[in-house]
Length: 358
Image (tube, rainbow, N blue to C red; front, side, top):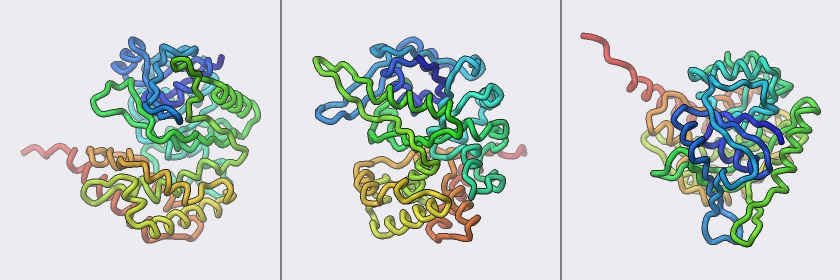
């Protein structure tokens, strides 16, 4: 039984549930009220399962693994075999979380990020990227300074999940049950652990009535460092194009509203990934992505956050533009995207500023 620390009890509870199904011990890091709720009632994740007419509800209390929740200040990182970074990039600099991140780095705990925004130490593993020129794409780049790149890797957070309206914070619903696609660690030891977790998740089954169900959303570990970058064409084609000057639109509309334009943007970002070192086989064909996007009837989390007044979101758009610039490349759609999001964030920050005293 491995001990896994998961930062972020919302999206993180998805992978946590799969680890609990596989008999592992999971500690979720969250706010004090959410930790109290989880410790009292556990978590609930609802999965669409092939062959089942209704969502399959999986409660942590029914699983063989051990779950607990706690606040950042109470965590002793040395007690864990792996840390999963399941929060949005802008949240790691929050009070308490930043200190925990520093303790994780000092303890040299291997870290698997399930983030859209890749951690800076992971990018330092890619020879064609000058990570020193990317700081301003991050909310708090300094917090990554203590991490050893050999102990940080990334999984493409392809599974889509959301908290159903009106539900408590310990409930999550999976909308698109795809897999976490992780790049191996630089070292063999952490990679062996990651592969063992993936194998355990693959073998786990859930008792549903008289059936033993194979629940979707697996962890796939790849030799290629570039497999997680497959998410970037998707983000640039769908997630960030949900954002409008006023309001937002669903991912489905962003992609299928002008399918040929979407195809062109997707191909350009995919080409950028290949120029950074990815093999075309590491990436997802546009047709497969477009088919999946047809079922995504909600705006992306970035669009929803902006619309709710967020002052910071994950800036994968700015990161991709900066990386393209390092290779002497540019795309007008990407420039428009970055400019629009800059303006939306500036407006949100201005709205939060306190008025000057008379």
